[in-house]
Image 1 (cartoon, protein in one colour):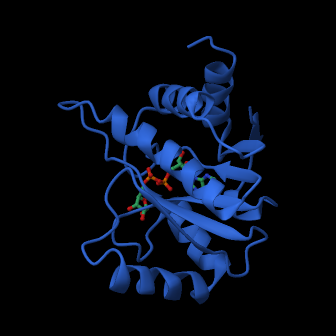
Image 2 (cartoon, protein in one colour):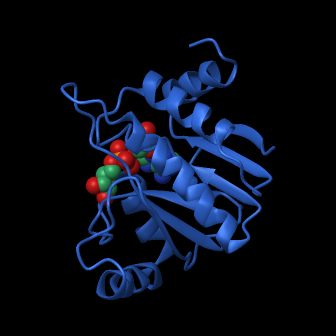
Length: 172
Ligand code: AR6
């Protein structure tokens, strides 16, 4: 079973085998984590994303799925791009958020990555409430069998960090 840890910081600075990007289905970049990864990682990542769009994902990467590129100038070796669901009060999309974590770990195993850093997928621009997003993240990585030895949640602010701390200690 993987060791799970929490870090307050910037996902682009993590020295891990793979960092997970909270992307959108175009794979062409955006704001938040996605913007930071492309900005710091450089144009190689976007070039690989373009190739993926031209070959495997002409219609875009579906929500809940994940795909890898190399990591350009980031300290990590790979970026695993996944598309979180936009939060909606009218519809339970939790299975899609869980799928992002599960599929990212599956891709990490395929790559042979031993350490993976996750952001709090969907909890920024996509509006997912942090308490629920943290619970789904922690439960899903705990339940997913994987070869990955270290799973690091990288939280950008103290509020997110506190929510993940509570989810990890089982007090949500
Ligand atoms: N490192 C770690 N966490 C971060 C960083 C960072 N550098 N920057 C933001 N966060 P978001 P989403 C936190 O919006 O909600 C993009 O435009 C942030 O505070 O990056 O899945 C994509 O292209 C929040 O808690 O991802 C999509 O269109 C969490 O990371 C859309 O945003 C996720 O916020 C995806 O939205």
